[in-house]
Length: 588
Ligand SMILES: [Zn+2]
Image (cartoon, rainbow, N blue to C red):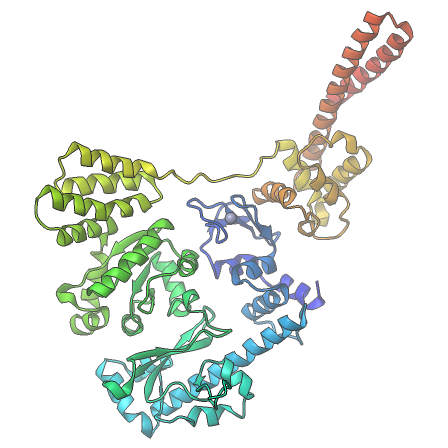
């Protein structure tokens, strides 16, 4: 590890960094726990040790330090992880070092693209304030946006020009980088080559899309005019090295703190809905941008909450996207409520026309997803005929099967049968079957330690010089009588730790399974074990070892007697007497 990485690691608090991604609760004197972001689980087995600055998941076995956490969750290499952690801690970056020229080039390109997006966002903001932005300002004011709101979301205006932004940015980056940015478009020439670039967004209001750290990485742009000439109502940046559509939740950068505090996320469809609701003080709101959720988006959201209130548009397209998103959220174990607004209004209009209190009340009155779906089934298949009931049930069964928990499935199935008035035994049986079908997820826990191993691992991992004696006793025992410890599952970890000198114990154990054992021992620790405890643990192992040797000798003695080998018998008996004496001494 470079000197810079070392110093970042010393200054960073892994608990704070991890809390930037997932919710943690205090679970012990020195450790915190939460739902693992790296595997699916319903009860927290992901732990962070505040003093030793490492994490470990008892469910899937991943562990490591602050850099491995950030690297894994952001899907970046070590140097990039160091850079991210440094940035989060406000530590200035030195000249970077990368492991390969490709990595360096990729990071350089992303850095330049971020600069370009920042420049473009500021420039669009400027244009909105300028004379050309008059019509756009009027439109935004008409939608209830104040100058402060416009500033908060950095809303801007792309003027009616093919080259204004290009001219602005051509001094900042070369042509190739400008093409990679997604801010420009071009026509393919007759010979297959790329024509000159021109501004992608023209005569449009621009809404920046930011990553979780709040950096602008793309834009959505709304046409100021309607009609054939204006083109699509909304156009978006294409995917670029910065921007992958299915990975971004609009407004998560601003909403994540409020989501954790409120312990739920309010999910709306459109960016305007999201902006409007957020600016009126409901800050835990994010938008899907009109498409159904992707698995990655669900995973990202899961880091912040597992409760969602969904407020999608009441039209059919809205209902379909809502159902798809709900299906995915259900599979991932989210608790989902559905907000329905009166008179078919969308969140933006509702909150503007009825006020924030009325909207808050509607969110509070959100229905459980089972109630919502049963209601949908009744609307889609009205009437009391057996045929309609079967259709309604067929609509609901996949939703019921999708729920990960049996209890919720049973409840849902019972509600559906009751509300749809199903009295047919066959149908009831079908429903019961759907509820039974899905096996509950069983979490795999790693092998457990004995109390003796726990004590020894903790002793060998002591870093506080004040407790050095306890560590010394353990090191001495493990290095001079390794045979005593060989039978233990954690023997490799004990050996590595005994040899560590002044190094961080967490860096000594490379094997995943051994690391899991060490993590298990350390997660629950309250303080270093006393010298007596360590001595006691060692003695009990020695006793066990001698007792097993004595058992062995007894068998050999019996064998020598049977053969009538008196010399062998004398030797073995003497050995056994010696061991008996050692054992008595150990028993004190
Ligand atoms: Zn895990």
